[in-house]
Every structure is written in structure tokens, then in C-alpha cells.
Image (tube, rainbow, N blue to C red; front, side, top):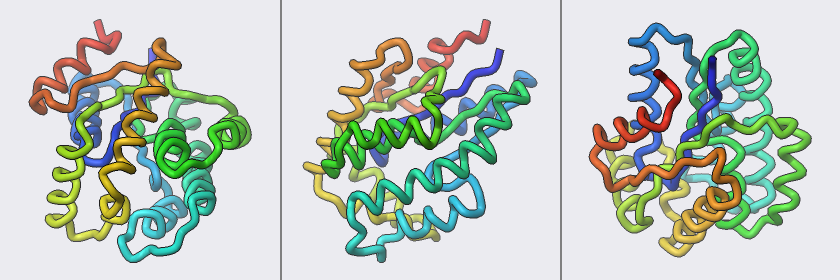
Length: 208
């Protein structure tokens, strides 16, 4: 059995670290696995990523931001996610459609019904089998994210310039999404140690 698993959470929550740990774990068990990320994952998507995340990108309207994410998502879905699932591989994706609902919907105020219609057109309602939401207090997550960006050679700090209130809205958006779809979402505390969160994630997976 292969699964489509997404990792979600506000910037600095630790989701990317946990995705990498699960990827390594599955590889060691000899399981076929593909990693994808959003925005990005394809040549076109990576170009879009530079626009969306570069701190020099200014005056990008919320709807323009949303549509750029979905342009990247469609490329990622067609080139990476769907072919891998059809080959019987596991897919681990760093953010997916829930991120648009949380960030552009709850965070920016874009109509959630419009985002849902985009999902129908772009991904045909192909949602993950499991979504791991790494939940962390926004003040701590934002401090982590800003420290991380200072160490990076690549400038991807546009969202970290947002206010704490913005990330509070995004976090609440994620928690709302989890409450609306408890069969798919599992919430993992971002306050756990890296290894502790990894072990919690392993307990949530049907790996036996």
C-alpha cells in the first residue's frame, strides 16, 4: 500500500525536517518514495517559488499570490504527484492545497469557496490520504523561521516579514481545517523534540 502524505504547518513549525526524517525512514525500509514541495517541485514551479518567496517581491495581490500557487501546484500534481501514485510509490509533499486555504484563505482573506473551486479544477479533489499538521505557537515558529532564513544562502523570507497576527490567522485556519476533516488530519505538537515528533509520526502511520 502506498500513501499520499502531506506535511502542513506555519513557517518555522518543523514540518520540512519531519518530512525529511520520514523520507529517510521509508527509504531504509526499502519503500519507494517520492518527495515533492510547494511551491516548486518542477522547473516551472521553482521559478514561481522565487517570485512567491523572495523577500524582494512586493505589491503581490492576494489573488495573484493564490493563482501563482495553483499554477505551481498543477505542474507539481501532473509531473510528480500523480505519476508517482500511479506507479505505486509513496508521495511526501511539503505543503499542498491546505496551505492555500490556510495562508491565502484564512490569512489573506481570499474567499474559501473560490479556493475550493480551484481545487476541483486543478487537482480534481485529489486530496492526501494523510495530512500531518505540525502545530506550534506562531511567536516561536516565526522566531525559528527568521533565524533559519538568516542562515540560508537563498532568500525565501517574504512570508516571514508578515505580522504575528497574520500567522495567528493562518494557524487557526489550519486548526479549523483539521477539525473539519478529522479522518485525514493528524496534529503533531511542534513543541516535541525533533526525534519525539518523528516517533509520533511513525506511530500514526500504518507501517506494520
